[in-house]
Image 1 (tube, rainbow, N blue to C red):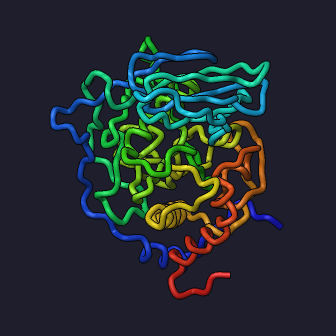
Image 2: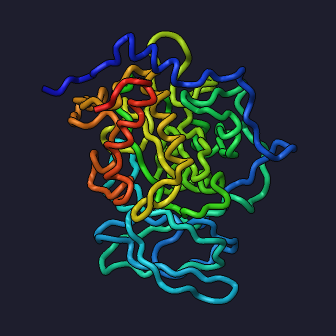
Length: 367
């Protein structure tokens, strides 16, 4: 019989507390630029055909309906047009109002032009994104220092939203209304994703900004859909805005920790914490640094929320009442028809759960 929530015992929690490193006093994570400015995102939208945005394209967001894929695309560089490549669905993160569209975010490498050839009958929309070369704008910084999430061993590897230069103005409509207001719920599950972006990524913070723009502008989520992101070097990035307090993912301290609702699994977001690994894990595994960070994050979060990483959970959406029986640490494909978090990585999730449990239960054999 599947228990709705299988909590860690007091003994296990004590072991978990010992396993998760104690953090030093919080220090602010601020933009690298000493003048306190950030690059405004450059975007150019369109449909199929050629796009000449007038700026180097770092990433291309594509969405489509009426077809199995987004068709094919090619990029123009200073040396001419590169070969055509397929536009396959990436991580189809979503708010609970799923529109059924396929989505992809393609690294464009500074392309000067884009040409997209859709499948017959497909409704295709594109958004060219540049998150590095736009005019500088004043950063909206948090008013208080920000703690890293539980389980982050090296504070220097953590970047809050100001640290990766999030443009907070994107979260608001023209009238100043917050597009995705915060709402807080008990944690029931954790879901792992991959972003299907470049594996050899020299500027992961720029990629996080591109995901933010794609989710907020192209997909109308109102914010980045993931709670946390992990790059190939093991760096951790604060995702979804969770309030002006210094705690990522969760609401203000006091009482049971409640997670802020996000937009990473359509229909099953409330109570479900989403962590995304940067890169494409279709045919490759996460780097050792990324995996080590992911295990530490999950162990810290499980300890804080008293979720057993090896439990089966009867998830109940507290907003809609939708239910699903899943592992406490699940992959995106356990919730939806998607290949996320990658054909290579997904089969290793049982090992991941055992590694998280071993970190929480030092010296106790893990089944």
